[in-house]
Figure 1 (tube, helix red, strand yellow):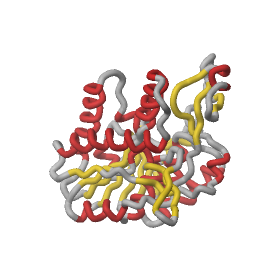
Figure 2 (cartoon, rainbow, N blue to C red):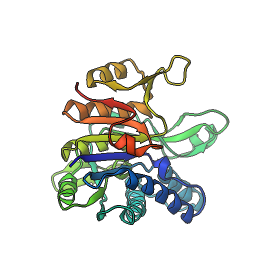
Figure 3 (tube, rainbow, N blue to C red):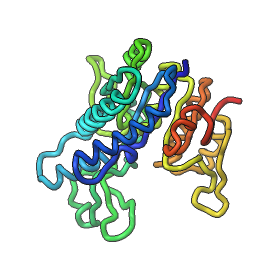
Length: 299
């Protein structure tokens, strides 16, 4: 039996317009994933929620309702997307599917809190941004180029991985880590929620390591990770070691908000002896079984 952890971006689950459109998009993604999984594979699925949290923030702004903490919005979208995806997979897989709302433990002393970098929510003009009660940065082009930015610390643990492992042993597929998880800081009496956004790629790596997964797969909109991406000299990476990945990261070869976290997560997982893959979502069967894409492993 191969234990697979598969990470799907929030854009693969996003849809403009009605709830029915959202449900159709999720169903299409679930269908392609279900067809790619062998009967003997154990499956854990994580997913992004960036577009969905952005829509929630737009709804709050348009309705002029009281703001809800960011960790609450992450929990809401993790549950709603996970529920849709779970029902769609359950109808197509040969096993039950459980959806867990999970947390991501972060260090409250992380330097990420002093330097918010993750853009979320609506776009603003410079004048509008100056009046907002939260930090904004100029991250785009044109008149409306400002967005809210929030901390994005790396998680240190996912408390629910024991439950994930138990469900896999019981023969179920599991959906967890939606949007990277609800960010919490450890406290003596439990945990305290924190307003931040966790990169789902790091969370997927932690889950994969905790459940002794054989392969961690990131399904993206590109066939490979590339050096010099977007230039005439771009070079597809097919098979690389964690050490080589660390060197590329130190040389700033990958975008901080796109391929960088995926490659760092791959290196972290591969250093523990697993195999990590970055491949196109257009061919999930080949990606899930390590037959395409960028593969990161020790040898």
